[in-house]
Length: 332
Ligand SMILES: [Zn+2]
Image (cartoon, rainbow, N blue to C red):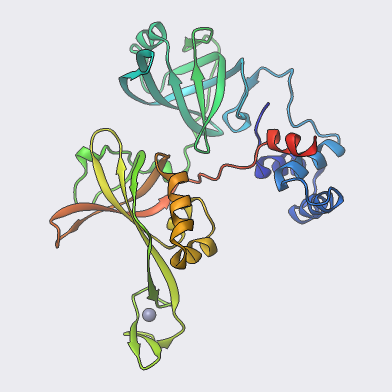
Protein backbone atom coordinates (compact mmCIF):
# COMPACT_ATOMS: atom_id res chain seq x y z
CA UNK A 1 0.00 0.00 0.00
CA UNK A 2 1.24 3.47 -0.82
CA UNK A 3 1.64 6.19 1.71
CA UNK A 4 0.65 9.67 0.76
CA UNK A 5 0.66 12.81 2.87
CA UNK A 6 -2.20 15.20 3.48
CA UNK A 7 -0.43 17.91 1.50
CA UNK A 8 -0.02 15.61 -1.48
CA UNK A 9 -3.67 14.62 -1.48
CA UNK A 10 -4.80 18.25 -1.16
CA UNK A 11 -2.53 19.19 -4.04
CA UNK A 12 -4.15 16.54 -6.25
CA UNK A 13 -7.65 17.66 -5.32
CA UNK A 14 -6.72 21.28 -6.04
CA UNK A 15 -5.24 20.43 -9.41
CA UNK A 16 -8.12 18.29 -10.60
CA UNK A 17 -11.16 19.99 -9.05
CA UNK A 18 -9.97 23.59 -8.73
CA UNK A 19 -11.11 23.79 -5.13
CA UNK A 20 -9.52 26.19 -2.67
CA UNK A 21 -7.53 25.06 0.36
CA UNK A 22 -10.40 26.24 2.52
CA UNK A 23 -13.04 24.28 0.62
CA UNK A 24 -10.94 21.15 0.79
CA UNK A 25 -10.22 21.60 4.47
CA UNK A 26 -13.97 21.99 5.07
CA UNK A 27 -14.77 18.78 3.19
CA UNK A 28 -12.07 16.95 5.11
CA UNK A 29 -13.33 18.20 8.47
CA UNK A 30 -16.89 17.21 7.55
CA UNK A 31 -15.66 13.76 6.63
CA UNK A 32 -13.84 13.44 9.93
CA UNK A 33 -16.96 14.29 11.93
CA UNK A 34 -19.10 12.06 9.70
CA UNK A 35 -16.81 9.22 10.64
CA UNK A 36 -16.99 10.11 14.34
CA UNK A 37 -13.37 11.25 14.45
CA UNK A 38 -12.19 7.73 13.71
CA UNK A 39 -9.97 8.76 10.81
CA UNK A 40 -6.84 10.81 10.61
CA UNK A 41 -6.77 13.97 8.53
CA UNK A 42 -4.81 12.18 5.79
CA UNK A 43 -7.29 9.35 5.83
CA UNK A 44 -10.25 11.68 5.54
CA UNK A 45 -8.57 13.57 2.68
CA UNK A 46 -8.02 10.28 0.91
CA UNK A 47 -11.71 9.44 1.20
CA UNK A 48 -12.73 12.94 0.06
CA UNK A 49 -10.53 12.53 -3.02
CA UNK A 50 -12.15 9.19 -3.68
CA UNK A 51 -15.64 10.66 -3.30
CA UNK A 52 -14.70 13.33 -5.85
CA UNK A 53 -13.64 10.64 -8.29
CA UNK A 54 -9.97 11.54 -8.15
CA UNK A 55 -7.56 8.73 -8.69
CA UNK A 56 -4.85 9.24 -6.15
CA UNK A 57 -2.92 6.29 -7.49
CA UNK A 58 -2.75 5.79 -11.22
CA UNK A 59 -1.71 2.19 -11.38
CA UNK A 60 -1.38 2.05 -15.15
CA UNK A 61 1.23 4.72 -15.27
CA UNK A 62 4.82 3.55 -15.28
CA UNK A 63 7.03 6.58 -15.64
CA UNK A 64 6.89 9.16 -12.87
CA UNK A 65 8.34 12.51 -12.01
CA UNK A 66 10.11 12.76 -8.69
CA UNK A 67 7.34 14.81 -7.08
CA UNK A 68 4.83 12.11 -8.05
CA UNK A 69 6.63 9.28 -6.31
CA UNK A 70 4.96 7.76 -3.30
CA UNK A 71 6.23 5.50 -0.60
CA UNK A 72 5.49 1.89 -1.39
CA UNK A 73 5.63 2.20 -5.17
CA UNK A 74 7.39 -0.65 -6.91
CA UNK A 75 8.33 -1.34 -10.51
CA UNK A 76 8.29 2.33 -11.37
CA UNK A 77 10.33 4.12 -13.95
CA UNK A 78 12.03 7.50 -13.56
CA UNK A 79 14.30 9.59 -15.74
CA UNK A 80 16.76 11.48 -13.56
CA UNK A 81 20.02 13.35 -13.61
CA UNK A 82 22.89 12.43 -11.32
CA UNK A 83 23.55 15.36 -8.97
CA UNK A 84 26.03 13.87 -6.55
CA UNK A 85 27.68 10.53 -5.98
CA UNK A 86 28.69 9.42 -2.49
CA UNK A 87 31.40 6.87 -1.78
CA UNK A 88 30.56 3.19 -1.84
CA UNK A 89 30.13 1.94 1.72
CA UNK A 90 30.52 -1.58 3.03
CA UNK A 91 28.04 -2.75 5.60
CA UNK A 92 27.78 -5.76 7.86
CA UNK A 93 24.57 -6.86 9.51
CA UNK A 94 23.76 -10.05 11.48
CA UNK A 95 23.64 -12.36 8.50
CA UNK A 96 24.28 -10.09 5.60
CA UNK A 97 27.16 -8.07 4.35
CA UNK A 98 27.71 -6.19 1.19
CA UNK A 99 28.04 -2.81 -0.40
CA UNK A 100 25.74 0.12 -0.77
CA UNK A 101 26.02 3.40 -2.62
CA UNK A 102 23.95 6.53 -2.09
CA UNK A 103 23.48 9.06 -4.84
CA UNK A 104 21.60 12.32 -5.05
CA UNK A 105 19.45 12.38 -8.16
CA UNK A 106 16.85 14.76 -9.47
CA UNK A 107 14.59 15.91 -12.25
CA UNK A 108 12.79 19.18 -12.96
CA UNK A 109 10.36 18.56 -10.09
CA UNK A 110 12.72 17.71 -7.24
CA UNK A 111 15.72 15.84 -5.91
CA UNK A 112 16.03 12.75 -3.77
CA UNK A 113 18.31 9.97 -2.71
CA UNK A 114 18.97 6.86 -4.75
CA UNK A 115 20.22 3.81 -2.85
CA UNK A 116 21.89 1.02 -4.78
CA UNK A 117 22.53 -2.37 -3.17
CA UNK A 118 23.52 -4.60 -6.04
CA UNK A 119 27.26 -4.92 -6.58
CA UNK A 120 27.06 -5.24 -10.36
CA UNK A 121 24.96 -2.09 -10.52
CA UNK A 122 27.33 -0.29 -8.15
CA UNK A 123 30.23 -1.24 -10.42
CA UNK A 124 28.53 0.10 -13.52
CA UNK A 125 27.73 3.32 -11.66
CA UNK A 126 31.41 4.10 -11.29
CA UNK A 127 31.49 5.21 -14.94
CA UNK A 128 28.55 7.58 -14.46
CA UNK A 129 29.40 11.25 -14.01
CA UNK A 130 27.50 14.09 -12.39
CA UNK A 131 25.04 15.50 -14.92
CA UNK A 132 24.56 12.16 -16.70
CA UNK A 133 21.01 10.93 -17.21
CA UNK A 134 19.77 7.67 -15.75
CA UNK A 135 16.62 5.94 -16.89
CA UNK A 136 15.75 3.74 -13.93
CA UNK A 137 13.36 0.81 -14.28
CA UNK A 138 11.84 -1.33 -11.56
CA UNK A 139 12.96 0.86 -8.69
CA UNK A 140 10.97 0.99 -5.49
CA UNK A 141 10.24 3.89 -3.16
CA UNK A 142 10.97 3.65 0.52
CA UNK A 143 10.53 5.93 3.48
CA UNK A 144 13.57 7.00 5.45
CA UNK A 145 12.40 9.14 8.35
CA UNK A 146 10.01 11.10 6.22
CA UNK A 147 12.28 11.33 3.19
CA UNK A 148 11.41 9.35 0.11
CA UNK A 149 14.23 7.34 -1.39
CA UNK A 150 14.44 5.26 -4.54
CA UNK A 151 16.03 1.88 -3.91
CA UNK A 152 17.34 -0.50 -6.53
CA UNK A 153 17.64 -4.24 -6.10
CA UNK A 154 18.63 -7.12 -8.37
CA UNK A 155 15.50 -6.85 -10.49
CA UNK A 156 15.97 -3.12 -11.01
CA UNK A 157 18.01 -1.71 -13.85
CA UNK A 158 19.14 1.56 -15.37
CA UNK A 159 20.31 2.90 -18.69
CA UNK A 160 22.94 5.64 -18.70
CA UNK A 161 22.23 8.59 -21.04
CA UNK A 162 19.39 6.85 -22.89
CA UNK A 163 18.96 7.82 -26.55
CA UNK A 164 16.36 10.52 -27.36
CA UNK A 165 15.72 11.39 -23.72
CA UNK A 166 16.28 14.88 -22.31
CA UNK A 167 15.69 16.49 -18.97
CA UNK A 168 15.66 20.11 -17.78
CA UNK A 169 17.60 21.48 -14.85
CA UNK A 170 17.25 19.64 -11.59
CA UNK A 171 15.02 21.43 -9.14
CA UNK A 172 16.92 21.42 -5.89
CA UNK A 173 15.18 23.08 -3.00
CA UNK A 174 16.82 26.08 -1.43
CA UNK A 175 18.02 24.28 1.63
CA UNK A 176 19.77 21.65 -0.40
CA UNK A 177 21.48 24.34 -2.42
CA UNK A 178 23.75 24.81 0.56
CA UNK A 179 26.98 22.99 0.15
CA UNK A 180 26.90 19.55 1.73
CA UNK A 181 29.98 18.93 3.86
CA UNK A 182 31.29 16.07 5.92
CA UNK A 183 31.70 16.76 9.61
CA UNK A 184 35.40 15.93 9.57
CA UNK A 185 36.00 18.76 7.05
CA UNK A 186 34.07 21.50 8.87
CA UNK A 187 35.74 24.84 9.51
CA UNK A 188 34.74 27.87 11.55
CA UNK A 189 32.32 30.06 9.60
CA UNK A 190 31.12 27.34 7.21
CA UNK A 191 27.47 27.76 6.26
CA UNK A 192 26.64 24.26 5.11
CA UNK A 193 24.26 21.35 5.11
CA UNK A 194 25.00 18.23 7.17
CA UNK A 195 23.37 14.88 6.67
CA UNK A 196 23.67 12.41 9.50
CA UNK A 197 22.22 10.58 12.47
CA UNK A 198 21.18 11.88 15.87
CA UNK A 199 23.34 9.87 18.27
CA UNK A 200 22.80 11.76 21.51
CA UNK A 201 20.12 14.12 22.64
CA UNK A 202 20.13 16.22 25.81
CA UNK A 203 17.17 17.51 27.72
CA UNK A 204 16.11 20.87 26.24
CA UNK A 205 16.82 24.00 28.26
CA UNK A 206 14.62 27.08 28.26
CA UNK A 207 15.31 30.76 28.58
CA UNK A 208 13.28 33.94 28.44
CA UNK A 209 13.82 35.79 25.19
CA UNK A 210 12.83 39.21 23.95
CA UNK A 211 9.90 38.92 21.51
CA UNK A 212 11.48 41.68 19.39
CA UNK A 213 15.10 40.64 19.06
CA UNK A 214 15.19 37.09 20.54
CA UNK A 215 18.01 38.08 22.93
CA UNK A 216 18.07 36.68 26.42
CA UNK A 217 16.19 38.86 28.90
CA UNK A 218 17.40 40.16 32.22
CA UNK A 219 15.18 40.46 35.28
CA UNK A 220 13.95 43.73 36.76
CA UNK A 221 11.76 43.24 39.81
CA UNK A 222 9.12 40.77 38.72
CA UNK A 223 9.43 41.85 35.08
CA UNK A 224 11.70 40.87 32.20
CA UNK A 225 13.83 43.44 30.48
CA UNK A 226 15.67 43.58 27.18
CA UNK A 227 18.76 45.82 27.01
CA UNK A 228 17.42 47.32 23.80
CA UNK A 229 13.64 46.98 24.03
CA UNK A 230 13.03 47.58 27.72
CA UNK A 231 10.34 45.78 29.71
CA UNK A 232 8.75 43.14 27.50
CA UNK A 233 6.60 40.05 27.75
CA UNK A 234 8.97 37.09 27.76
CA UNK A 235 9.05 34.46 25.05
CA UNK A 236 9.91 31.06 26.49
CA UNK A 237 12.55 29.78 24.11
CA UNK A 238 13.92 26.25 23.99
CA UNK A 239 17.54 25.30 23.29
CA UNK A 240 18.41 21.77 22.34
CA UNK A 241 21.87 20.22 22.32
CA UNK A 242 22.54 17.04 20.45
CA UNK A 243 25.35 15.04 18.92
CA UNK A 244 25.16 14.43 15.22
CA UNK A 245 27.23 11.82 13.42
CA UNK A 246 27.77 11.43 9.69
CA UNK A 247 30.18 8.48 9.95
CA UNK A 248 33.23 10.74 9.33
CA UNK A 249 33.00 12.32 12.80
CA UNK A 250 30.45 13.80 15.15
CA UNK A 251 29.68 17.33 16.26
CA UNK A 252 27.60 19.03 18.89
CA UNK A 253 24.59 20.78 17.39
CA UNK A 254 22.74 23.59 19.09
CA UNK A 255 19.19 24.28 17.95
CA UNK A 256 16.74 26.99 19.02
CA UNK A 257 13.04 27.70 18.74
CA UNK A 258 11.22 26.04 15.80
CA UNK A 259 14.23 23.93 14.95
CA UNK A 260 13.87 22.20 18.32
CA UNK A 261 10.33 21.23 17.38
CA UNK A 262 11.41 20.02 13.94
CA UNK A 263 14.18 17.89 15.37
CA UNK A 264 11.96 16.42 18.08
CA UNK A 265 9.11 15.96 15.58
CA UNK A 266 6.59 17.61 17.89
CA UNK A 267 4.83 20.97 17.87
CA UNK A 268 6.33 24.11 19.44
CA UNK A 269 3.65 23.99 22.14
CA UNK A 270 4.61 20.43 22.99
CA UNK A 271 8.25 21.49 23.24
CA UNK A 272 7.34 24.05 25.90
CA UNK A 273 5.45 21.37 27.83
CA UNK A 274 8.66 19.32 28.05
CA UNK A 275 9.89 21.97 30.47
CA UNK A 276 8.04 20.35 33.35
CA UNK A 277 7.77 16.79 32.09
CA UNK A 278 10.96 14.75 32.04
CA UNK A 279 9.05 11.51 31.34
CA UNK A 280 7.59 12.98 28.22
CA UNK A 281 11.07 14.01 27.12
CA UNK A 282 12.38 10.48 27.64
CA UNK A 283 9.57 9.24 25.41
CA UNK A 284 10.33 11.80 22.72
CA UNK A 285 14.05 11.09 22.91
CA UNK A 286 13.51 7.40 22.34
CA UNK A 287 11.57 8.16 19.20
CA UNK A 288 14.11 10.57 17.81
CA UNK A 289 17.44 8.94 18.69
CA UNK A 290 18.97 7.30 15.67
CA UNK A 291 16.91 9.20 13.17
CA UNK A 292 18.60 10.51 10.06
CA UNK A 293 18.00 14.11 9.14
CA UNK A 294 19.56 17.01 7.29
CA UNK A 295 20.57 20.01 9.36
CA UNK A 296 21.57 23.28 7.74
CA UNK A 297 23.51 25.81 9.72
CA UNK A 298 26.74 27.43 10.67
CA UNK A 299 29.97 26.23 12.27
CA UNK A 300 31.06 28.29 15.28
CA UNK A 301 33.79 27.93 17.84
CA UNK A 302 32.83 27.43 21.45
CA UNK A 303 35.70 29.32 23.09
CA UNK A 304 34.96 28.04 26.56
CA UNK A 305 35.38 24.41 25.55
CA UNK A 306 37.71 25.04 22.62
CA UNK A 307 35.66 23.01 20.19
CA UNK A 308 33.60 23.46 17.04
CA UNK A 309 29.83 23.47 17.30
CA UNK A 310 27.10 23.72 14.71
CA UNK A 311 24.21 26.16 15.10
CA UNK A 312 21.14 24.87 13.30
CA UNK A 313 19.36 27.31 10.98
CA UNK A 314 16.89 24.91 9.52
CA UNK A 315 16.04 21.26 9.50
CA UNK A 316 14.64 19.45 6.50
CA UNK A 317 10.95 18.77 6.90
CA UNK A 318 10.72 15.38 8.47
CA UNK A 319 7.08 15.03 9.34
CA UNK A 320 6.02 11.48 8.79
CA UNK A 321 2.33 11.55 8.05
CA UNK A 322 -0.17 8.96 9.16
CA UNK A 323 -0.33 6.41 6.45
CA UNK A 324 -3.22 5.21 4.41
CA UNK A 325 -2.58 1.77 5.94
CA UNK A 326 -3.38 3.22 9.28
CA UNK A 327 -6.59 4.71 7.94
CA UNK A 328 -7.65 1.37 6.54
CA UNK A 329 -6.95 -0.43 9.79
CA UNK A 330 -9.05 2.17 11.65
CA UNK A 331 -11.98 1.73 9.28
CA UNK A 332 -12.07 -2.04 9.60
ZN1 LIG B 1 14.97 42.99 22.54
